[in-house]
Image (cartoon, rainbow, N blue to C red):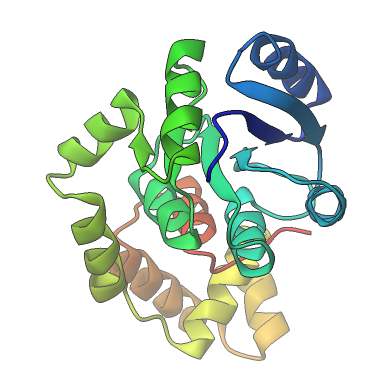
Length: 221
């Protein structure tokens, strides 16, 4: 039988954020234990040695994204529930986090009552989307399930060469440098850039980098 008392792990790259949340959650009658972790390795090691019911997961982490950590948690500890607690209000990030196995998505700008509601709901095998996350999904006129399906179907297919060019663009290489790196002409690089912008429906380098990160096409060391 599932206990009403939760054991919670907060995963965030800011120790102050962890300490602040811990101080608030420890006063909750429904929570028996709260701990924190600041990296993927620390998270997995902690889960391997402690019993945890629900993980509050940030998206921005130093060694890996919260999406990747969530995938790993669900692979190694399938019974542990994960709730995204993040500043990211991008529909693509919400979709990827849900697909990674998260049972909830809450924005950091929300109040603690909603965080507690999310923890209780997910702990009892429910799903939870904060009001802000629901509004983002409604703005896209899709349910989370429809959103995830359509993201895969409508995802533009970049060629191997276009992916190479994209990765170098995100590293701030000029067309000349990209050409030298890939042994192609500057004119060919420009043609690839145009195709990439068209396929990804982006208009600026910032927009392109954001798209590449959201789609997992590039990683930053």
